[in-house]
Image (cartoon, rainbow, N blue to C red; front, side, top):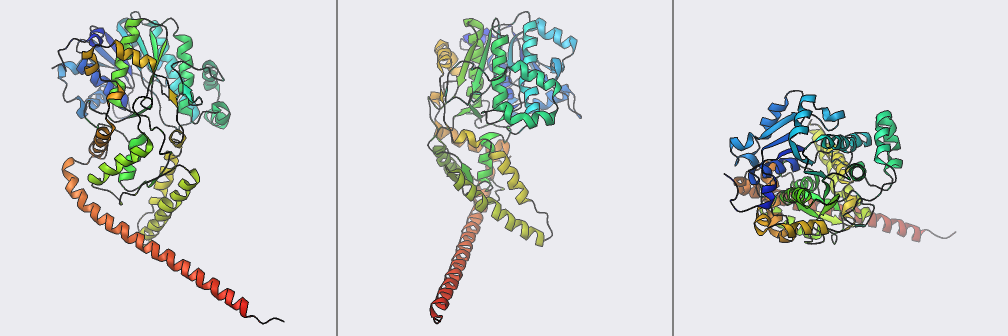
Length: 504
């Protein structure tokens, strides 16, 4: 069954077309694949780049992909349109065989390149090979395609985060992407990592830097192609499709939310008055599909689409905390380790103090108790890992950017009323209060695997954790008062002894 029988200019654009997707097994790619299959029934075929793993070939991995519950609404005949292509964006030529390459160049007319390594802490060379060289290889493939109508490169709104005002243009880089591609060929991993601070310059991490370079590569090499750069901000769980609140990983804010409600993360370094700039994955995917349609039908020079929320529908980190407190207390995780206790500090110094008091100090105490009972010490190492993962995103939580989104708005204006419903992408329509509730409950259900039926059990457990939390606070307060009293008594005694000493 198709999603709708309404007239759709966007869906019509994809009729009879063959689509090629990189990153189809990722969070964004899964939703893109599902939406194309469900809402663009006239698509002839969708080729997905997928790499074999040690224990699974590409066919087995594709079968595993379709086991996800987001594809349950699709008929088998619809899913049969998906053709896996064995390859890897980190390999020369994408690791595609000559036969598969010939098929793609002969049949494909629409390309979505979303594959990337998104980890801020990955080594620079690995990031450049995947995000920069991989993009170069996709462009090479696109240039060979005989019927290319639209090529959409998925970047990030923070690719040029060294600028505070970010227009829908590609900014020049201090070094050329070709130079960095050449460096990747001869520099060792260690050499490039040693040079990383000098290479990345003002960019806060290799990911944003690599995306900015890749954009410059697209600008240089796709001048005469129907191409566009799509820049979403912080992509988070689905608002409505394919399932409200759906997510499949703990990346970004989702991992932070899980850590907070599990009672593990208790402090965050952010400015409560600045934009969080979240964009739900289904809104992002809908805008990507519409942008590719716009590129293929409008036939304008290379366009850039800044898809963000801060300028049209603001969500601050302070409101984020308020919403999270509301929904987190109503339906805590069934396996929560401690009571919900969460603070946001704008001051990095105050945050660091809170990290030691609320994270590392309790971890040391609990690990000492674990040692006494003959168990492994795990909590301190866990907090070291959490601290390593949560520090890099702080750069974005303490700053705010002004994004221009004229091209996004222009595309929405071109869409028919029916298409605006089928491919909902106007972020101004999103109600954050409702969304944050769905976001949290979706994280609880799909990521933490807590069935909704476990809420009563979780609330009973949370009452016990609340009692333990308050008891610990009382013990710590009494201990602090006891130490303070002893210090005061000692100081008074010393002062009295000094005062009573007879003068010589």
